[in-house]
Image (cartoon, rainbow, N blue to C red):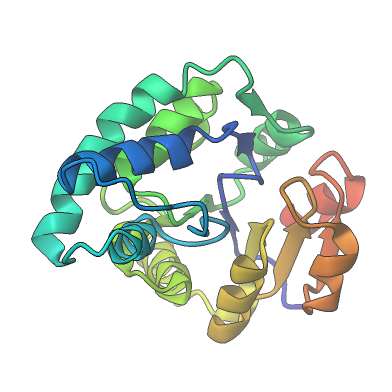
Length: 232
């Protein structure tokens, strides 16, 4: 692997465990927008997806028409509901996360988010865990979010483009370490050409993540190997 030039971090299952707050908020928002239909959303998959794609899938399951205007309306409702749902006392910051973020900040390692969350949702989740201060929130800050595209690889590409603009040089995919916990994180990173540090702190086991081709796999970010990789 090339020397790490930037670290791109997922949120859900990687930095925090939201105890289902995101799913509940999205389901509330979609059902309200669609007139509270009683359709079944148990098959809705969130793991590693983007908020816009999740809403498309949810509205399809409910038989509702999807377009950008409808998606934006649902997202606005979602962010309001998310703030309420995040009060769940089961929410927690995952093991090793604070120490890892402290080290990235103290060593001035360029880092940002690479998440399927919309920016406002991402900030709410991280603020709930006291982690928002480890990241910049300006439009040109390093990071990729749901607004960059429904497909997860577009989020990765956007994060690398912003890193290049911020650092004033071309950041090659091979030097952008993606840190995440799902098969979709791995697939997106590899589509773009980025190495993957997979963390088995979400719903997927280390063996599953390794079998999918993640270059590096740890159980939690407390593993010294994770910090060694991220610090380059």
